[in-house]
Image (cartoon, rainbow, N blue to C red):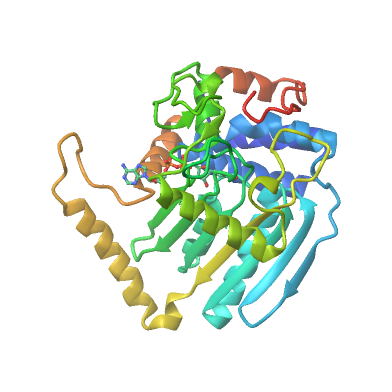
Length: 349
Ligand code: NAI
């Protein structure tokens, strides 16, 4: 069904407030989820609300965190969120990074001890909206076979990058380092659809098209994706003194425990590398160059990264956002959560 964005945001916010989250934190959580749904990234939108509500209600997110922000050098800082809600503190960490990069040209800000923060495009877009380049990466729970392995070790460890242009549009590249994000498998389950055979493997390490049989995801491009997810784990985990690799906490196993996840933001201010205006104009030129490339068979046009999401957003702004009926029903109901997510098997739900 179609839902207007204001309505969807309000419903999502109300649900996590009902679970116990502070209004201020819930407002940002709902904004990050709305951003994802609006951009067609449904794997990280309203679909996640019930999981968050259950985790909040069961104590796995610190509702009164003792947050510490430490500027550790001219361009570096660490925000320790004491296991507060990921969306809010990842946003706050990016705000800090933007302020540092305005002054000093570059910022590297580690956000330590947070819960799941959602779609990373939200955070890099914050930097691009300030006419700076944003990079963000974070850990997620072990559900990916390393190249050559038959059991999970890494998370889907996403990386996002945004660059602003003079047109007001941003290039936003945001991906899990797996062939598909776990949320896409969940989305396929919620719609009872098959998945392509190159997304995941079953309990025998064999490719599967049944989203309910998935036991591990696979890295993009074999050893190359495997290398990228390792890079994320080192920069967003080990660098911040957090658990890493298979020691990262599970999303579902114990909803009463904090996740202790890490996220790293990097912001680069083009003003410090020559002419900021020329940078913006060159990005605009790059976008139009790409549009002029002769399309391959089966394609209408070459799009810049993030453009399919921009197109989706434009349509959803006009027509309302497509939300799965069951999810809307839950959001509208008085139920805070249905006790669906507390289980040992990360692939059960
Ligand atoms: P995706 O596969 O949907 O898109 C990846 C990138 O490719 C996007 O930047 C998209 O704009 C671009 N793209 C897609 N089609 C294109 C086309 N035709 N032309 C040009 N560019 C195109 O993304 P994925 O890997 O499914 O990730 C989805 C979301 O999941 C992301 O927002 C990511 O941050 C989030 N995620 C979050 C995690 C967490 O723990 N917080 C873990 C894993 C993923």
